[in-house]
Amino acid sequence: MHASVVIVLEGHLTEESLETELGKADAALKTHVGDKLWLIVDALPMTGYDAQARALFVTWNRDRRPRLHGVAIITKRTLWRVVVAAMSLATGQHMRTFDTVEAARTFCSAS
Image 1: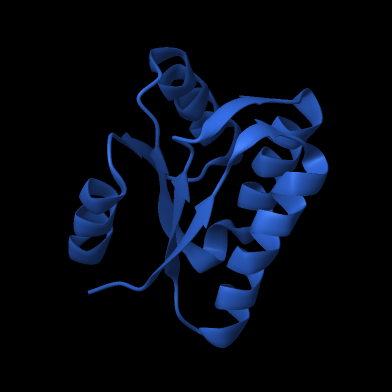
Image 2 (image 1 turned 90 degrees about the vertical axis):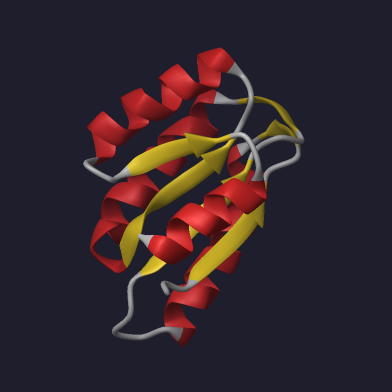
């Protein structure tokens, strides 16, 4: 069973609001020194995002790729599933989308 950290992205995502949530993930990485984690991103309450927020997410994932098993993103939006696939290519990070947090947790704990 692999450990995971869950962050929630709400409303219109800005670089500042994303930095706050990614700070929670960084704190979890610090407490699990030597271990890889899954990052679970609940984007269901998110309504949109700025280009700067997307760029920050790509950079953050690229920099932390060695510390993460991958990223599970919760979204039901078809367009955002395509964006996740593009970000996965841009970062080299394993990213996968899910419809629910529970489905992501189940996948991450078994992978």
